[in-house]
Image 1 (cartoon, rainbow, N blue to C red):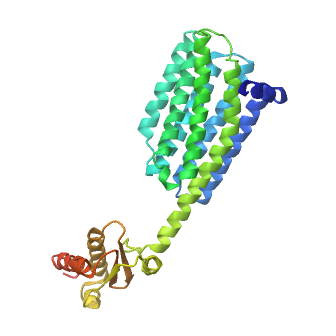
Image 2 (image 1 turned 90 degrees about the vertical axis):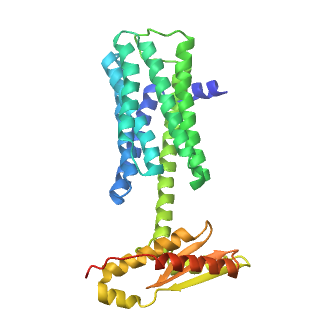
Image 3 (image 1 turned 30 degrees about the vertical axis):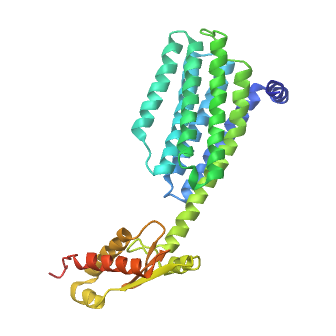
Length: 340
């Protein structure tokens, strides 16, 4: 059925037309990512995605020329650009999860992949070069799928679907290598043409739009959660604020305890030692609260020098012990005044 579907698709659109469509689709994706980055400069992963998609555009355009006018340098450039683009998407997956773009690893992976492809090509074994490239592309796409899959709990449906698209695209590249190996196509002197190549082009054309849409959707989910977190967080101490405390209080179990803290004579600290010292006192106390709560508890700053800990399923006795532990820890703190 897959083969019949491929042939049916190829009747409607020839190979060059699909390459052009893939190029325009990649260009639209790159433009979308770039404009999104301009709107939200703090989301650097959008720029990584945009650069990666731009490499895909360049690769497809050069590959189209390579298909019609066989040239080893053109083939090497096309495959190198595509591999660099895929590595950028892999790096973006890591950046999206951790906030860090692993540039050194990306350069190493790209260099190794390009070398594995370029060396046999310039020795005349273009078929081996195609096989090496397709295997490298498949491995990069599988790694990208796994990178997203590792944090699927953040947005299960979106991330599972995105991982699936990357993995399915990787399978289509792997099939290209398997077919060439099965045909013993070590030296070809032309661009590869077979049912697997056609399938790969169709899969890439259909999946790139889905990958772009899901990537932007994930970014929007992250932005929404960030805004929600900012709205619930006290900027000075990093604790939850009054609003978050009251919202959580609406969903309390039957047994729960609330501890309220008020730092005595805090106004004198600000008046006598300066607001910077006062801020350090508040931050230090917030840190003590954070270290004193369990998973599921909530520490909040409810205003000025007033704090609270919400303890679901905690008895009065256990809440008293927590309060005493906090009091004792804060009592042992020492502060240096900016006024001497």
